[in-house]
Image (cartoon, rainbow, N blue to C red; front, side):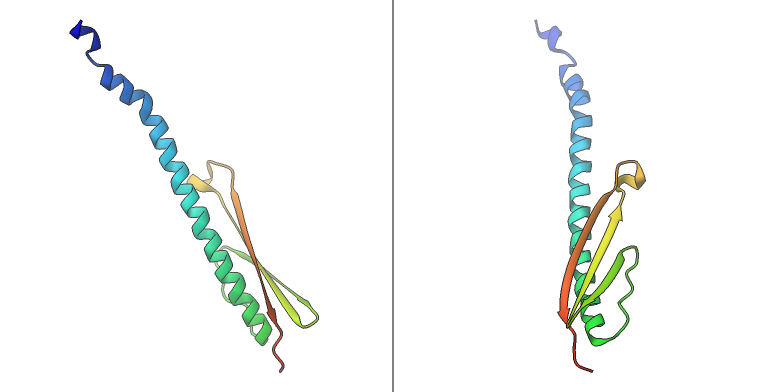
Length: 105
């Protein structure tokens, strides 16, 4: 009876290993999205502040910053689209919006 179980641990590991790798990739992608969301929030806040003071927006790197003025308010929206795993999966978009009051000149 004992000889029939021989190698079963190796087969179980071979079956479960792809699922573990997929779980790791999903977790790392989720962390990247959270990091990008935090970066978008910071960028939108800094861009709204700069526009309220009449200064040019900060360097956005790979993000797109849109600034609109509505009366005495400035709204800055930062958008970032990134494809995880080097573009082999569909891209994920994150965005953030910040509002600041226009400062008197």
